[in-house]
Length: 333
Image (cartoon, rainbow, N blue to C red; front, top):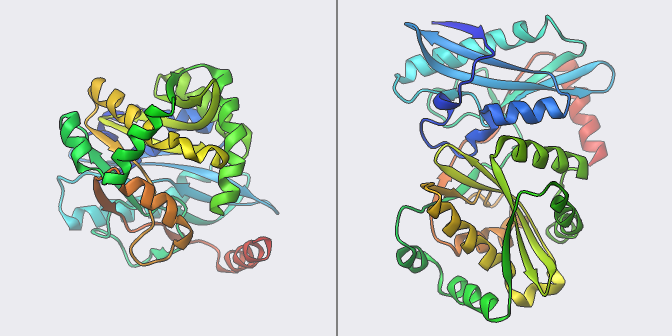
């Protein structure tokens, strides 16, 4: 078993089976990292001339010439190998990641964050940390017919979909670059209402430009009399459509536009041959995300299955700087 830095396209390996948000380990995300001018590396673990694991990681710069590494929803490790082999592959990635980055590093890494698919194969040197991406998600199998999909929904969700239609909500699928401005106009109000932190406009603009360039996503708009009242950013990868970001106008909530928006997107995904619809990001059962109660209730109204993951873990390279980082982060918050 050996680890190699690689510039090959491993999308077929990454997308071979469903892992929620595995697009974050794809070539799509590499292009997005390039657009952000971030340093990133792709690692492949090879055993008997076969790829058994890949890991896309990138550098987040910090003050005073420091940084940390992050592998979003990664590494991706084959499910065809034993737990012992999984641990060995993960150990290899952890032991070599810093060596790979050192040739081009200008910022000394303090720690390495990663988001394993499951607890199986975890190693003792990894310590649980605060989650970056949602730990749990809700996934719909959209291979069923529309009647069955509607039957799996909560009665109130079906009612709100019909209500949105009666009140004149119209849904538009867009690949126009300038239409991201509609999302900007809604996202800040949504973040304030739900007490969540969002990225700046440039982040979403670069993301949208990347998705357009790769034909890997859509912006879905809900309109009432030509006024955009809700907007979702969707990502397409493998056999899955992911609802990555959404925003809506609370003042127009009586139109129930987000319900119809989701349903029409599910229908379109089904028509295009996708098998799964990932609603991404619900509150875990441990009660650690009380502020997510509303959005979780909304998503669970569509039915589906909860997929759990262990969340974010880290390996610390420099304990002194790590402690300084934690204190500074706490002060900023």
